[in-house]
Amino acid sequence: MGRYRFIDPESVRIEISDGDWIEIPKELSIADDIKFGRARSDNDFIAMLAIMVQEWSFVDRDGQKMPVGPDTISHLDRDTAFEIASAVAKHYSSMKDQKKASRTNVTKKRSISSAG
Image 1 (cartoon, one colour):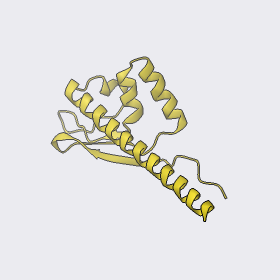
Image 2 (cartoon, rainbow, N blue to C red; image 1 turned 60 degrees about the horizontal axis):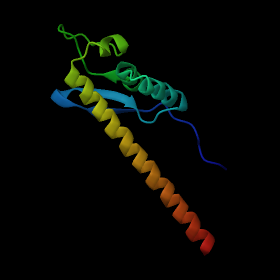
Image 3 (tube, rainbow, N blue to C red; image 1 turned 180 degrees about the vertical axis):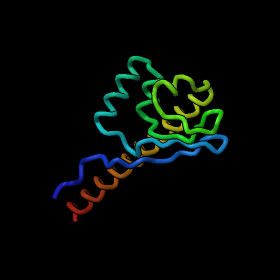
C-alpha cells in the first residue's frame, strides 16, 4: 500500500511576544501553497498573512476577540505583522528541514535493505 498523500487540517499554535499566539496550518495544501505563491509574487504581504494565520489571541480595546482576515491584518502595527511573518517562516522552514531529513532516512533505509 502507498503512503498517505493528503494534508490533514491540523493547526499549530505559535507563541509570540507579550503572551499572544497565532495558529497556522501545520502544513500547506497545494491550494494554499498556490495562493501563497501568487500573493508573494504580487508582493501582497497582507494576503500572505491572511492565508497563513487561521486564528490568533488578539483583542480590541474592549477585550473582544478580533477576527482574522485581510481587513484586520491590514490594521496591525508594523512590528506585529513582521513578528507574525517571522514566526510563520521559522515554522515552515523547520517543517521543510524535517521532511527533507525524513526523505533522506527513507532513501538510506531502502538502500540498506536492497543491499542486504
